Image 1 (cartoon, rainbow, N blue to C red):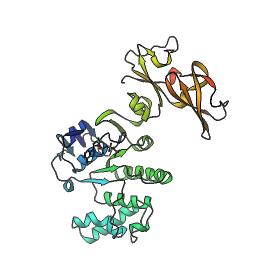
Image 2: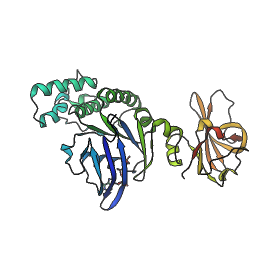
Image 3: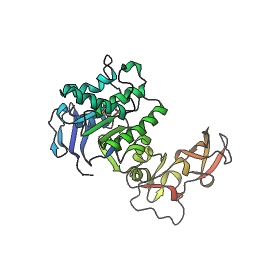
Image 4: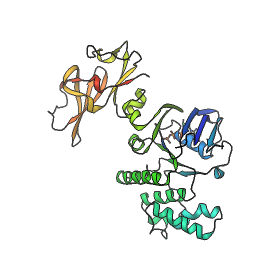
Length: 340
Ligand SMILES: Nc1ncnc2c1ncn2[C@@H]1O[C@H](COP(=O)(O)OP(=O)(O)OP(=O)(O)O)[C@@H](O)[C@H]1O
C-alpha cells in the first residue's frame, strides 16, 4: 500500500469566514478505506466537498497520487462521488445512467458498453440495464449510483452517508457489498458516516471528527478499545463516562478499588453498559427504567453521578423500576482516557 496516496495538509475550510474545518492533516494509503465519523455539523461533508473540488480551501493543500489538486477543477480530479440521495437521471435507463460519465468523455461505444456491463455486474444489477430508476428499490438505485461512480475508474471514491436512506436490512446487505467491491477493485475510499457500526465494519482506519478537527484517528480496533476522550468513547458505546479528579471518580464519591493505580494523566473513565455489574458493588443507584431487549435487559439507573446504563443477560435476576440497587464499575473493564 503506497502511503500518501491522498494527502490533506493543513486543510482549512470556511463558509463566509466561518471556519468549518480547521487545519486538517491526514494521509491515506492507496486502496485504503477511511471512515470519517462524527456528529452532525462536525465538518465531514465539508471535507468531502473540498476533496471533490466543490469548495475551494481557505488554506492548505490536497494531493492525490502525487499531484497537487488543490486548484484543479472537480471534473479533472479523478474523484468519484456517491451521496445519500442517489441523484440518478429519472428519464434515463439504468444503463444510460451508468454510461453517462463515459459518454461525456467521448469514449468509443464498444468500450462504453463493455465497461457499463462490467460495472452493473459488479453491483449485482446485470439484468436491470433497461429499467428506469423509478422501477428500482432504494437499494438498487444506490447500487446504480455506485456503478455510475466506479465505471469511470476514479482514483478516489468519496461516499457521503451512502446507505442512510436505506432500511436496516438493506443497509447491512449494501455494507458487505461495498466492502467486497472495495477489496476487489482496490479503490481508495473516504466514507462519511455518523454510524459507528458502519465505520467499524467497513473501515481500515477511522477518523473521528469533532467541531472541524480530528479528535482521534486509528484502526477500528484501537478506537473501539481505547478511545482517547469521552467524546470518542460515547461514539464507541462507552455510554457511562465519568471525569477523574485527583485520581478519583469525583461524581461517584471516588470509590475506586483499593490499590488500583490510575495513570497520572487519566482525565476520564468509561464503561460500556455490558461492563456494569448489578446487585453488588460500592455504588448505589435507583432503577429508573427497564427495557427487555431479548438476549439482555437494559437498566437505566439514577445515581449521584447522573444516569448510568447497565445491560445484563436476560437470565440474570430482574430488578423492578423504583428499587435501590448496588452496582459496580469494574476497573478492569474501564476505558481510561487522557483527554477530557
Ligand atoms: N453552505 C453552508 N453555508 C454555511 N455554513 C455551512 C454550510 N454547510 C455547512 N455549514 C456549516 O459547516 C459546519 C460543518 O458542516 P458539515 O455539513 O460539513 O457537517 P457534517 O459533519 O457533514 O454534518 P451532517 O452529518 O449533518 O451532514 C457546520 O457548522 C455547518 O453549519
